[in-house]
Image: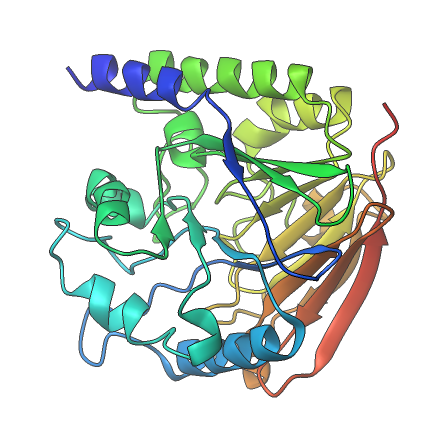
Length: 326
């Protein structure tokens, strides 16, 4: 029954969701934030999460944003139980309460800790919260860059369904999907979407990293099955969380790997520094003193500008990617 349900959902998710933008801004702007899921005991948030949320509110107030991309592990440590779970209020609604954030849509994907609970309840919460948008386990969004004919395609994946869940108390590396048929359906979906993408920018988002120098390291499943697709179809960037720090990596083809996992905890591990090809790592920050951070992305028809920001407003790192050449 679960397989039939997910098959139907995957077919529905192949219909592109277009999000019309308005206003005078001539760029598409969003925040990428991962691993922000608070705690399962009162007060249901960490001090780092509060500081990150406050800085997000300040950043959006000053610079604007069209949406927020949540990169998984939305609720530590075992997700939510049902659509009425109080964690939606105590870890999300009450924490990201700045006036500037109240009308900003969030686009959600699930992490390994979310899959230990009820992901379908997170999807159903889209019908309760005006700003929580989670239409399916994986889905496709197209954004027009304001005041231009250029556009951005964002493919939101469920890397746990694709690769399997991981146990952070053991090796932390997902070894196989719970259902290979479901995994292959998603991989076929991703392939078809990338093959047909004509947008100037194509972004892929998932929870697990393709490349990471930190505690969890590269995800073997994604290196084997997703990385070749990113290269073949000239994806602009892959965005993820999972490791609790901030990283920017870039391969020899110019694909950016944006890791934004500093929402709730910071870990200063570079355990897998030598598991990543030499020269890929361009930036790393895992010092707990920084109290985390997030990535702010501003896309114009000519550039994709990427800025790593920590609480207090400090700019940690900036880099630029460019439109694909079709």
